[in-house]
Image (cartoon, rainbow, N blue to C red; front, side, top):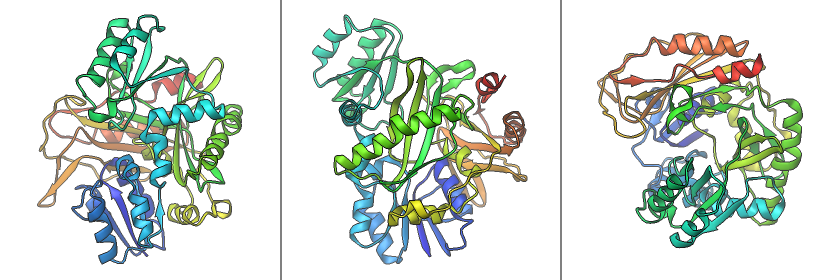
Amino acid sequence: MKVMVVGGGGREHALVQALKKSPKITKLYALPGNGGIGRDAECVNIGAKDLDGIVSFAKENSIDFAVVAPDDPLVLGAVDRLEEIGIPCFGPKKDAAIIEGSKVFSKNLMKQYGIPTAFYEVFTEMESALEYLKTAPIPTVIKADGLALGKGVIIAETREDAVDAVRSMMEDKIFGESGSQIVIEEFLTGPEVSVLCFTDGKTLIPMISSMDHKRALDGDEGLNTGGMGTVAPNPYYTPRIADECMETIFMPTIRAMEQENRTFKGCLYFGLMLTEKGPKVIEYNCRFGDPETQVVLPLLKSDLFDIMEHIANGTLDQANVSFSDQSACCVIVASGGYPTSYQSGYEMTLPEPGEDEMIYIAGAKEQNGKLYTAGGRVLGATAIADDLQGAIKKAYALTEKISFTDAHYRKDIGQRALKALQ
């Protein structure tokens, strides 16, 4: 079968490497892919948001199945467009992708169906938001309604920070139109957990839990990023909590979407906070997380493509979905200065990954057989071992063999998880 993966980051490289193992796939394309993905799939220079280009390519090349990985094309309706021309897809349709595309929609959904989340208010006028902030509990969380490359959330530690955040979103439009409507919500505390779930709209199968590290610098200091590393499984996510989440969050969300005539098929990502009052939803994503995918998929023992076909066919209850009981760690190596300003175009020196090691390229261009940096997050060095300590040690040993000018990575990925295990 000819399969195309839409997207071009580290998550897509992890998807491509997992799909490559399927005996059913004879040809794999990535649109647009990147220099590293080009070593595992044929890259086609069509942007992930170019729906016309994607549809034309799929038609002309007799594509049998499409995997739409990033949020933008899903929210724009890439799956709808491809299914209209008879191409089965992995990923939700536009009406279901709104669960990530609009924070206001997802918060109202949770309120209506009694799914535990932080208390919140929605604002479309800046003046009323600023008025509300005069008495709102601090710290508080301010979110742009629409997509903002995973960066549309500001945690305001002081009232002044909160006012600045509202002004920057609603007046200065730092996130464009995504900030014309905002959510101001209660600041929750507790361990964070990411759980990616396979679902065909009826059956839901959670994947291995993971722990993301969002801040740019060691000790969870510095600016928020798209993610500087991950470990799996997350030690805070016990079997008891997993059962509670299934009962109070996961299945109620799937049923709520069904009730709203927005059946969700694909990968539904739950960003959870384990508060003193129980697990609560911080956010939903309508796709595989990045860099969570880079630690979850290496632990998948089943054929990923087989699972995706079952989801597209609505027969997930018949799929074989099994994960290894090992642990994984991914260290993101970024360009110095990320997430603000950074230089690109530096030649990269990469080792040959050993057994149970993977290098997932996120931002690189290939020229004359060499890879050059081309983005903020450049790559993820992932390793698997029998326990978390072993996986972390192995991932860092791999990271140390990677070099390019201005390379930056955190030195403490997984340390919080190890403390939780003690």
